[in-house]
Length: 158
Image (cartoon, rainbow, N blue to C red; front, side):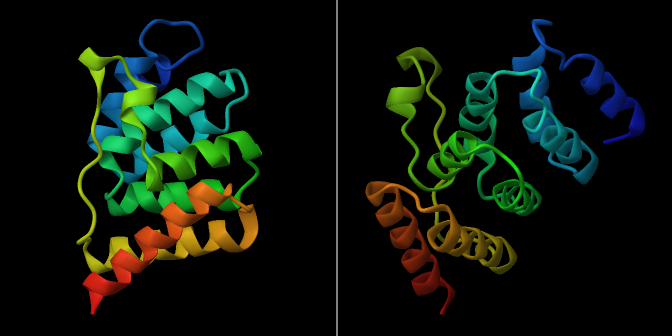
């Protein structure tokens, strides 16, 4: 992403501007570090409601959840100062997607299959999942999903 593109996205990702849903999709589709730095900043931006931020995760992170740079952004987010509710929302997107709950039938977005993952992405996801288990106390059902994903990753990486 060029500085001009990031400036454009920044200008069109403001509270109640009507462009946010399109901008979030463009930023995650671009997937470069400058684009994801903007996404991380917006996830931390309390001018947006937690519901809005969780919605961005469900709509845009979900369909790119295997991308290395996005996984690194998610890892940093989970280890940072996000609220417990937003950390839980991100863990669900990464490990226990529920498109039938999150979307209307005409707008369902599906996560890419996993595994197998490239080794570098698998390593980040494994670290992220282990951190969640050890430090975030996910609910029992989500804990099982995280552990199941980690086991599947381990089995495919051998």
